[in-house]
Image (cartoon, rainbow, N blue to C red; front, side, top):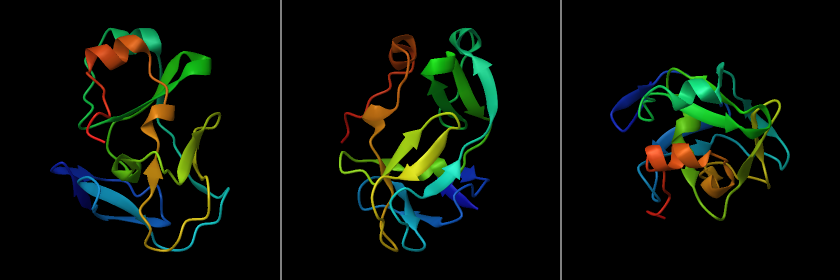
Length: 140
């Protein structure tokens, strides 16, 4: 098990990667091997919840994972942290999110031991969620 922000990550849902300290921000996800462009690193699963449910409950962004699915007006929720939580942001990203099914795909070739980056600006969240939970990538 690894820790992110003093929380245990309990599922390695990206077996081609490992977690270690990042020179960019906190902990990061790194490639165990060369990953070719277009390869699927993982398909994310979880519980689907309609947006109206999320609007009316308090979510814990430190202990759970939430991904908005705009075409379905719903959320994919995982009640624990996975290796996905260790992916840091960069505008020079090397993975991207594809939907239906929700998956993380290499957007270019990734070298062994290279840090995995996602451009958080591409992840879609409803405005109410951004405001309510003060979601920002301003530290970058």
